[in-house]
Image 1 (spheres, helix red, strand yellow):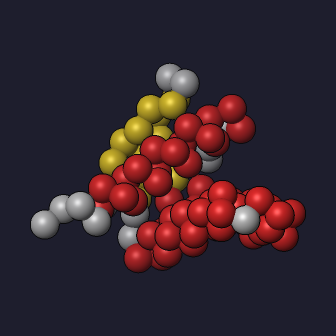
Image 2 (cartoon, rainbow, N blue to C red):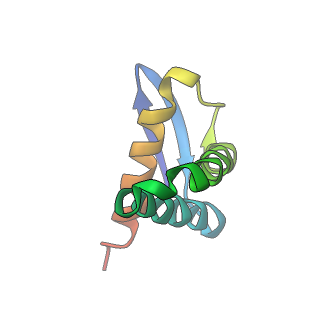
Length: 87
């Protein structure tokens, strides 16, 4: 699945393939873990950071500007969720 997104007036090309979907799924699970067990945040924060970096590196081009990272990740996770809603 390929899609163009815009964050803060910057355009990015996003590609979700098997590898990047695995990163997205992992990130989703890590986020859920921190919501259900706040004490685990310190333990998983480095895993979250690594997963975010891998996801941005492999799924998005051009390189994401620091100010755009949150918005790009949010849109990427929405794309990931939508990919499972299609028949």
